[in-house]
Length: 169
Image (spheres, rainbow, N blue to C red):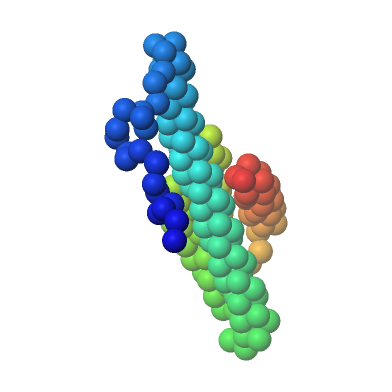
């Protein structure tokens, strides 16, 4: 048998194992350690910001999907309603108004990144205004100007939603 593999290798910490650097080399090593630490901290910050944006987008899409489902259900209920046109239309308007109120509450609870907060506030306002307008419409007759106003506001809502959704990565 030969000598152990560790024979002739100095023990850690002994002068033979120490790396001797000039003062300039020590400065460069220190610089790289500091730059590496800063890059790592910046990467953590970027990853956190991206996670927040993704989360806000996901929550916004989920809230919009819930709104779309509620509107679809209200439409199905209206078409199968037998209580009379005025009652059926009123039930539809109340259900859709409640759905827009729920969307507005969901949107206000989302932690949007700073660059998207004003657009999110505008979308929330659109939803709240649309809900209020739907509640004000008379079930006893169709007022063409109110219906046109509701359609215009719905188009604005759709446009603002699309802009905000596209803004979030």
